[in-house]
Amino acid sequence: MGKAVLYVRDEELLESLKKRLGELGYAEIIASGSTGGLLGDALELRPEVAVIEYADEEQEMGATVKRLWDQLGVPIIMIARSCELQQVQKWGESLLYTILAKPVREEELVAALVLSVAAARREERLKEEVSALKESIESRKVIEKAKGRLMDRDKLSEAEAFRRMQRLAMDRRISMRQLADAILLTDSIGG
Image (cartoon, rainbow, N blue to C red; front, side, top):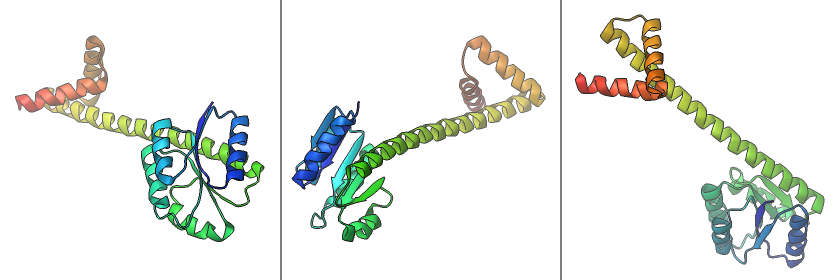
């Protein structure tokens, strides 16, 4: 199924996490020995989720987590002591999917994993939708501009210009956007 990368110093928790992730179907589980190793392992493995134990004394923790998020966009689950939760939340609010307080119960971890991965997938789908919508809007703008040029140049009504563009696009077996780009290009060269 998936891949997971871990940075957990507590050996008992680490072994429990590895076992539980294996039971959940994670085929590849990498346990990194340092925050730098975590980033390198994650960039190589391209995991579905990262589980990190917070360490206040590690200055580069925040920068590593930010780079993990910026470069991979994987859901990050942070495990911290109760007294560290507010501190973690301050710098990790926009980066972390879940913050769990120690001691971590397996049920909490499983729920956090399932929800975090599902949220990341949903977010990815939304990003793709937004991208497609932006492209659609941009295409519509270009088509409208080309239609306007045809109306001005050939003294056509809006409907006539649109039908001409449709017919030309079908005859040439190209998209309306490609035709609109060609019309605007030839119009700028000729004008």
